Length: 178
Length: 100
Image (cartoon, rainbow over all chains, first blue to last red; front, side, top):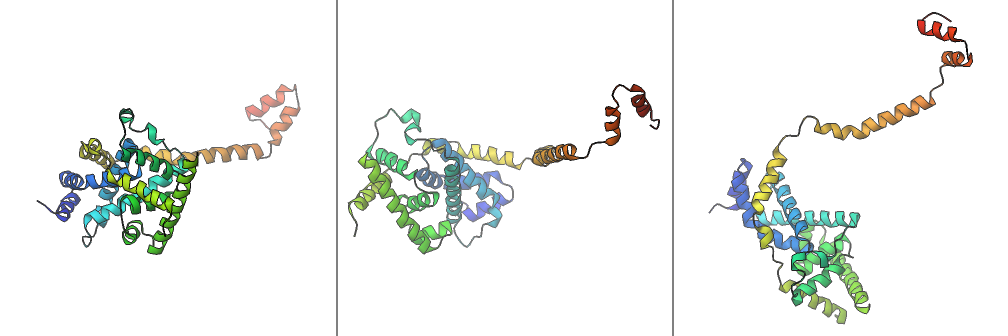
């Protein structure tokens, strides 16, 4: 089985099959990560496509010192952040209840309900807070890992994560009181 | 020390983490969709595509011409012709190229 580096070399020589193989290997993890940020399946599909297109465009810049999946995760983080910012500017959040219409009538699991509550609360966070809380709490990344993924300093990550938690607590408390 | 709200938040996160979002439906045929998009991205743009980029420039030129026409001083020769109302001979001479 060829390694990621071998597939990248082939992909750089215009081999679509090699790039497709790379996508096949890593798409599951990227889909999992993006769907932690966004609930709408069409949007998740669009964003994952955007991530792999960015990876394909920048494949020449990939240095083999670090594993491909780390490099791809950085692209995924930046793409999610870009979409979060774009969404906040556009102010076109789709309520989570209306996503997955075909699944709406099915009984929801406790986790699905928790996801819905958290999703609604997270919509009120800033893109930075949304990003850091998703990476820290849902993807269970360490401060160091988040710093590498986002390009922020470790102290910046800590401050943002702390503020994000405080904001989220306030949002959840207020929604609980209603 | 963590308060109740912190604990509740941690429980909520743990519950969300416990179920990985199911993306198998989205992953199906993903490579095909992606490669189709990549092929489209590789195709060269038609020659007229960049013209649309210059639309704001063209619009600015039209606005500038409009302003210039509106602000430029009136043609005194034509004005004098207009003032001499009823005298068609002068107008005819002017358009015939004869000196007035």
